[in-house]
Length: 290
Length: 334
Image (cartoon, rainbow over all chains, first blue to last red; front, top):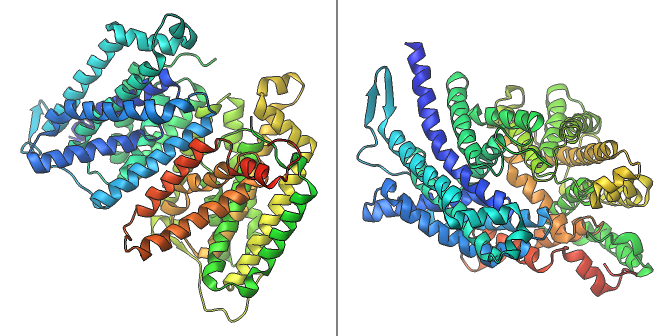
C-alpha cells in the first residue's frame, strides 16, 4: 500500500515536472542564444496564466486548447521586448541587464496586482476531478493531459531547432555571432525571434500550469527562481537538460512534500541547485564551461 | 568601465560632503517624526548599499542574495537579546561572526569551484532562499509566525539596549553610514582596494600579476557580509519584529542593490545618492497617489519599476558619475 502512494506521488511530480521543463526550456533558449538571463521569465508566465483564466471565465475556452494561441501572444510580447528594449543591453555588463529585466518583472507583477488583485485564482474545468486508473496507479487526468500536451510542444521545439532552416540560423547566431553576421544573417531579428520563442514556451507552459496550480501575482518571482534552478541543474543552454531538470525538480518537490512538509519542498530544490553548482557547475547535460 | 569617482575629488567635493554631514546632523532639531523616519530609511539603504558595493562595486562579485546577511544579523542579535538578555552591542559581535562565516562559506564554495558571473549571482539567491525557508521552520526564533522584541513606551533612550525614540535610531544610523563611507574611502585608497579593482576589471590579468585573487575575493565577500549584518542588527531593534518571509525575501535583496546601481556602482557617493533618490521617490509617489485618490496596492511599485527602467536605460553608469560632472566635483572625467 505504502509503495503505491510513493509511486502515485512520483508520477504526479514527474507530470508537473514536464510543464516546469517547458518553462525552463524557454529560459534556456533565451540564455543559450541571446546570452541574457531573463529575470522576468516567471512573471511572463503569470501573464499567460492570467490570460488563460480570463479566456476560460469569459469565453469558456479550455486552457489546453488555448496553449497555442497564448504561445503566439507571448511570442509577440517577447519579440517586441527584445527588439525594442533589451537589444541595446546585449553589450552592457550583466548587472545592467539584470536591472532592466528586474524592472520589467516589477512592473508585470504589480500591474497584475492592480488588475486582478492579490487573491489566488484558478480554472474549474469539467474534467478537473477525473482520473485514470492504471494498475495500482491513480493519476489526475488533468496532469496527464497537461503533461502530454507539454511533451508534444517540447518535441516540436526540439525539431524546430534541430531541422528547420530558421532554427539552424538561430543556432548559428548562438555558436558564432561574428560568423552569423558574415554570412548575412539578420542577428537582431533572430535574437528577437529567439526571445519570442522563449516567451512562447512560457505562454504554452503557463496555459498548462493554470490547470495544476492557483495563480497569484506573487507567483511570478517564485516561478523565475524555479526556472533558474531547473536550467542550472539540467545545464544552461541545453534543451534536453531543461526537460530533464524539470522532471528532476518536479520529482524532488513531490517527494519532499510527501516526506517532510509541503512548505519546505523548495528547500530541497535549492539544496539540489547548490550541489549541482558545486560539483557540476555546467549542469547535468551542459557543455563544459570555458 | 566603472568610474572611480572619489579618486579625483576636489576641495569642492569635500566642501559639499561636509555640508551634507552638517545638514544631516542638524536635521533632528527641526524635523518631525515622519521626516526622521524617512531619513532613517534613507540612511539604512545608503549603509546597506555601501556594504553591497564593497563586493560588487569594488571586487566585481555580483551578489543577489544580500538579504541573507541582513537576516542572519537580525536574527542572531534578536535571539540573543530575547532568549538570554544579551545587549545588542554584544549581540552585534555574534551577528557579524555568523554573517562573516556565512559569507565565507558561500565565497569559498563559489570561488574555489570556479562559480562566477550569472552562476554566482544565482548561487547567492539560492542560499538566501534556502535561509528563508529554513527560518520559516526554525521554531526557536518563532518560525513563520514571526519573532518579536519586547516593546514598551520608553521615557528615555537606552542606547546600550537600543531601546528609544526615532532620534536615537537616526543618530545611530548616521554614525554607521558615515563610518561605512569612511571605511570604504580608506579601502579604495589602500592596497586591498586596488587589488579588488584589478580583479573587477580583469581577473586573469590580476592573477597573472601575482594577486591571490581567491583570497581577496574572500575578503570582499566576508567584509561585505559583516557590514551588512550590522544593518541587520539595527533592523531588528528598530522594527522589533522579524518575519522570514520579509527579511530574507528576494525582493529585499533587490531593494538593497537598487540604490548603489541607480546611484553609480563602484563609486563612494553612488549608494548615498541612490538611497536619497529612491526613498525620496518612493515617499513622494505615496503622497502623490493618495492625494490623487489612486491608492491601489501596486501602483507605487509600477511607477518605481518604470523609473528604474528609465534610469538603467538612460544612465548606464548611474546618477552619480553624471551628477559629479554637472557639479564639477571631479578633476577627471567620471
